[in-house]
Image 1 (cartoon, one colour):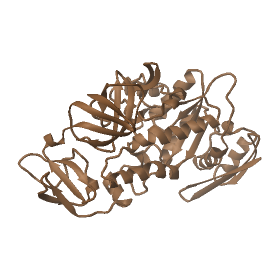
Image 2 (tube, helix red, strand yellow):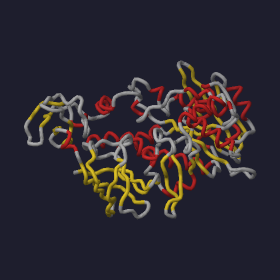
Image 3 (cartoon, rainbow, N blue to C red):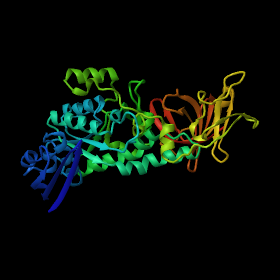
Length: 428
């Protein structure tokens, strides 16, 4: 017999609930706060999955969600497959949930509560905000589907936010969404799926899976404008057999039309922001609040001649043109930042061109000598020669790429399949 307690605060109201669980079933439930007494009566005698499907007032539901997360467990159902569905509160995950149910599986919604900067200007638009959690839960409960919330705020700060700040301190341009999606988020979600007896995890990402050269690999989504394979490229291949992407063959327009046709409240919901923990703020302001100090330094050309001053090397990324505070006979761009001397080096666009790229922490998922490579999420792919290395690989682009930034991901494609991925360490 175990006990689990959950607390929640909204405005000036507080709610708490204590569960007593015996052999997977709630044998006792008590607490205080708006809506708690009625919820406690409703969930007594249910297992965790049954309790997670009970609708309640937001405050009571928040308290129950906190109590249920540690005791969530279940065996696979006998008559159908159980599938955990990652829920963000947006339209994509809501439609993924419905598609899982239409396929004859038993969906269970799960939302990650992640840390967001309390000083950010628009924290309610992100995929892990309190309002997003409520929206995801209401979608599930409106369909009679269980919903769980995993509070991973501190774990997220350690695994994603800390390395983001450290990367900029080293003069890199890290992509936190790749670290989050490629390791942290899926590891947590798949661990939860195992606990509740779910054989698979479904998400609303626009990506696909395909057999390629004898291996199951990640592949581009059908909608080129929404394709998220770049962000997912560092997923461990061992996880792919337990993951599905119900929207991989759809366009965003088809997803919204489907949501509207099925009366989902998420049909018209705005897109969530990238780098969710910034909460709508500028990354430079965030970095300054989280340890990177404003420090006066020189802006120089490649010969070392000072052209101007700046307030911190970490405010600049290769290819940046605006905000340099210098003028020349022709446009100048940030070529690199030098943390040791707090220097930003600028030059004309042609000096940005890079063809030799070293990649660390990288893997080739199949042997490949040539591939199409993407060096930023929104950049076009470009052909390159691939040379394996002990801890990554090296790329030789057929034509120069501009604005190549250490810390970003290099993702390799063969046809639409992701055949390798790693982090850019150097470019020349």
